[in-house]
Image (cartoon, rainbow, N blue to C red; front, side, top):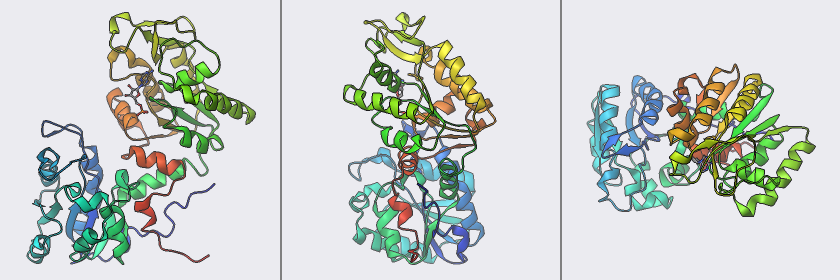
Length: 403
Ligand code: AMP
């Protein structure tokens, strides 16, 4: 199965931007604690497209969502702290506009100075956003000339500023961040350097089934860790004690192991574990001697023997896709497996691409994030793209080409 990739989609480079009002949909959905941004990767990842548009003389209207506010009064979801950081990064005045569907943006745009840009307040304050409202989108279309989507992490959602708005606009395309994301993800689907290894972990098999299905015919092997490993081990008849297991996925897991073997591919599962009596009982943590977990314990990380085996496989790989931690990496006692795998991936010569969300956080926490070829800014979006789903925010930008 080949992906349509970026075929038929224009990029910001394809437009004459001088004097034009460019609506730039970004993913500025950064994690915050008490009004402070705790990780600004999504802001810095957005800067190249913003800077390009500014250099080319566009009048910029930026927009993003932030979190899941219920009403406009949920001020903790205001983009104000983001506006401040953008201002510092770009050295321009960032004007935060509260009513994107009012006449205010239009009036502002008429007198906008060269060193000023507009940032619309959290688009999810508007009811029409998550409803993909054409009426709401039309209000924005009335004061913008060119639509650019650079919000990869939101492109799997058919929301008004991702989908309805570009459906109304003639001139539309993507920014540099989405271009890079799709190019990187496509390199995992088409002509990957071999051997190609998918390192999968995290909480649930069920979240990853569609991706595993798609990758089964493409990769040379899987390396499995995290809680999902216990569903596979149990399916094989290994005692896993109190470890997290998805009972309704045991049959699927067993069949999957058989299908991978039938294809002559490898699937590595843990051979030893770091276990404890419960998530919180760190004092009871210990390493098992072998694969068996006793009845009153649960597996919370891969063990040292497993880490050595996984690291050796990773070292030989030509392409690596990493999605999901090997254990409960947020707790230091259960983080060695995840951080060790992260180090092995970082040190390998392979093309190494990390899925977003928890995997990105794990790569970051391990201290090896800057050694990866690419860390996706979108968790859900990157998985959906890899599993072959069409992203509404991308498809709406594709010119229909007659066969
Ligand atoms: P996911 O979002 O599916 O990638 O899952 C990430 C979460 O899985 C992290 O918060 C980890 O703490 C959790 N996790 C990883 N390994 C285990 C395990 N062995 N038991 C329980 N939770 C785990």
